[in-house]
View 1 (cartoon, rainbow, N blue to C red):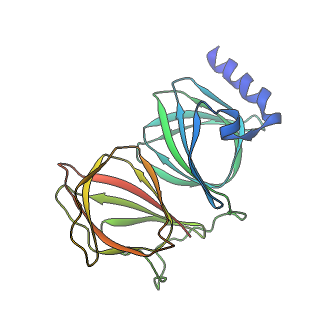
View 2: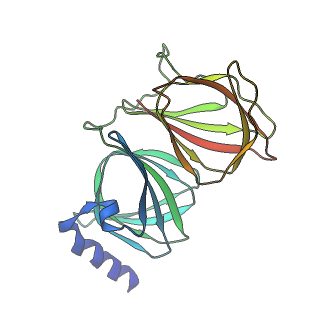
Length: 229
């Protein structure tokens, strides 16, 4: 009965579908916004339902494992399971979502300027463009004409090589991080703590940043870096 009621709610709301934050302000919060991107944190408790809404092109970072049912305007539905730490590109879509399992938390990077379908690259660009981030612990995850995404994993006690940040970037902490930073030509800074789940925007296109980072914690830390091209 709960499932039937949820499906009825999905179907009855698609006509008035609109922005996610507008239809679910208690579940979707804007954490950063400018003319190109909007960063939204979505939290859904078990069995909670998002009304039908329109979603722009976006990068979704799953901070927790999730199991959801998606209903589309044509009445078709599907269940989607996602592992924690998953990062993926999604094209524009209209749908409703019901959380079928444990509490869900996603950080969503919406691309306002994405007017055409994404053209995914099969591998990192060759030759490398100017300002390209090239460092072994920054693992290229995927890329299209709108974003370049890295999965950054730094083992306990390890130090990255010096690398460039030349694009505006949304950083999403998948795990807690305790690290120190050294800007090129300067001494090491003091260790800082970044909690798991934190999302931050860095405007590196205005001032190229060359640095390296040392993991001061007792375990590997992981960060997703979404560069806006």
